[in-house]
Image 1 (cartoon, rainbow, N blue to C red):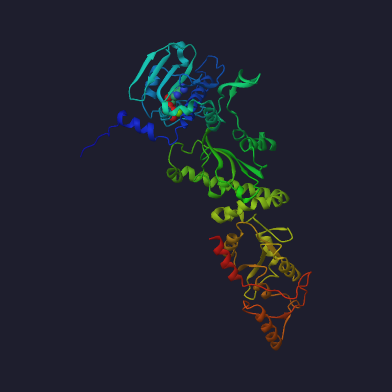
Image 2: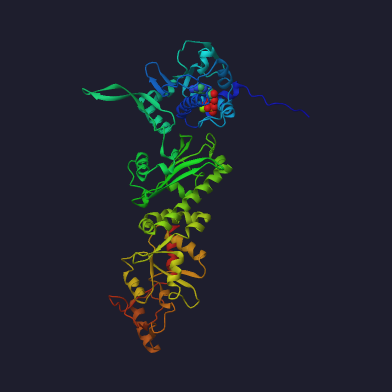
Length: 551
Ligand code: ADP
Ligand code: MG
């Protein structure tokens, strides 16, 4: 038997990293700015533990673009690197300084973004040459400023250089075919997308103002980010208005949200965030992928399928978790056990919150029900554990605009709406105008009629019939309505046989499609408008049509 190590040489792995590591070239900026933020956070940790005794001073990370020379520079005043550190962390691909650092400063470390040791090389997706000019915070103990330079081949140069201030400049000499990244507007857009909530201030050039018809630079930094977004704060420190404002910042065009849920766990995984139930103007407004996923305040993606349960992809907001693996494929994500736990946790949190609003403020819950219904129904239809919880607070609305829980409704109709097999009959209308006469007639007989005109009510009815024991949903204009067991004295007497015959041939002559007739004298008037006859339809026939139309 032979044992050995598979040889990996940079010659063959480098081009692969450059080409396939990330599907999107634009994320080089996220990676480099994250590294600058990490370097700054590490320095803050060193200052807190007393290992760095100097002045922290201004810690803003600065991004500059020089179109003439074709460069982008990312500068920080973080902890910098010595020549040895460059050799260890940069020259060795997939060797991350973050792990070393976290190992050493486990308890004091501010959230560090990096941990794969691959992000830096994403610079080569857009740059033909990359320079690092850096001076370690330990320069007073003799560390020298160094310049590292590499043209994307596995060869690099490393030499001493001049630099008086601690920190690092990463200089990208942008490739011919990536010139788009030299456009200010493009960079501004990318920074806003990826760095909007980073924990260290990031500035992109200076603010501009209009003077005498021209745009001129001011002295003020053009700051990209909010370093303390609300999901990093304690819910008890926040007011309703803070949540609303944050929502407006994220979605300036949207209506005020119905309500929100502040997520905050640190065991068994780390996750924070705020989820909003949006108010939608119409069903066309329903949009997936409005939740943004962050990892330590770095934007990762807005495609959260597989991370949150399907029905929650309709919510808006932000989720931040360092435990969601960043640089990996979707299929891997979906099988990751942390991701599964996260999904279960979020579902539970959402149902708990709904449950508590329902319990503590039923009036508010009912007022919002018409808007909430679509989300809750969708969750009930697609996720069993959500159904279990939601069936306690999901509501039925009747044609008089009254709301009932499933249980309350069952109690309401139990004595009055059963058929001869003892099945509970849920009468419903799905069009108030068209079915007005039938609703009226049913109400006159003392029945209650639900309004089920929602987009998901057809599948909901099918599901509820399976969930509820011995129950049927019957549209108010169906033939079953007449066959409910009604209280003594309410039932109309059937007409004698000969009269039935006469009327039947009369009707069938006029309306050839009528299959069956039945005539009885109604003890009660059929509603306010005293309809002399009522034409009903077999429930199962109609349902077959309904199902066909949604398939
Ligand atoms: P990761 O961030 O996942 O550790 P990277 O490839 O992005 O991997 O970076 C590799 C290492 O290089 C970092 O862990 C860090 O030690 C070092 N490094 C990169 N950028 C900087 C910087 N701006 N300042 C100090 N060190 C840096
Ligand atoms: Mg990194």
